[in-house]
Length: 67
Image (tube, rainbow, N blue to C red; front, side, top):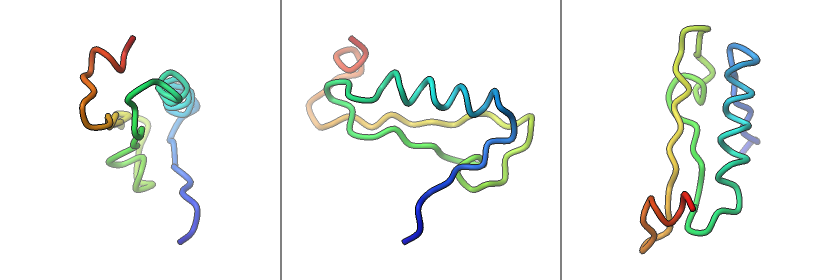
């Protein structure tokens, strides 16, 4: 399997993705931060949303992961 290299259409998309990833990295209960949709597929345009899903370990609530 080859490494994943997201394709962000603008520096703002890349900066937002980095900020979100940095915020959730190492937080208790966070299992993964997933980039989804057009950026993940390398088909994003300047008008694309940055679609990100935060997966939590079983037993953690959203509130506990944000603290």
